[in-house]
Length: 275
Figure 1 (cartoon, helix red, strand yellow):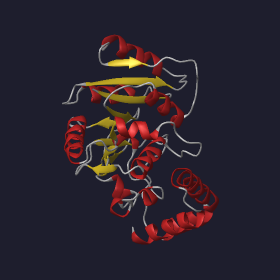
Figure 2 (cartoon, one colour):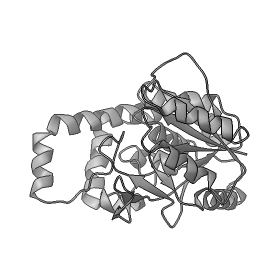
Figure 3 (cartoon, rainbow, N blue to C red):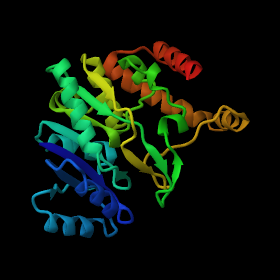
């Protein structure tokens, strides 16, 4: 059984399209578990309608904890879920029909080779606008992300390439990842770093499996990176923002790996030069 974990927050505009794309998957042995993080729009009404219509496929996690934020909301979903495999789901994307099937086939193949290890399967994404019109066929290319240079826990801590909405991971990866740490920057980054730090594997599917919708209110988003005058001028004008983000990533790396500040920023510099 696969548990698909979806944390929602004021997602009424695109939520139905995302849930429909899950229901229309070619692999059906899965359950969608939803936790709402304090929505004030029609999100909960939409969830309740789907739960009523698909009682055996969709369940809503009920609690009185209110708004926890995206990291802790996904952590609670993961804590409350019991399955062999897990997937994270965002409220505003569209999954391509073979996403689950392709992910579990790759997982089974990898588990045969690396039995008992924590394993995460992930993929690139197709970046689309609010109407699902393609912006870029590769999120990694669009954002100048180079997975080939991020194959160790130390470098994954510098720049995580495994977006949570693409991740498919086994129970071993869950077990070594919980609880999330004090300095967790994002649920996906925490899990992939912990997986690699514990001798696990991050496996990449050859093709994107998801339409990654950009609509101006994304939690993370896909900002195109080009090494031009605009890019470097923005780096200067937003220096405090970039330094803060890198410092938070360093704190996460230190919590998991014991990485020194100097070592982190050296790896960050080396990665920027390589990509």
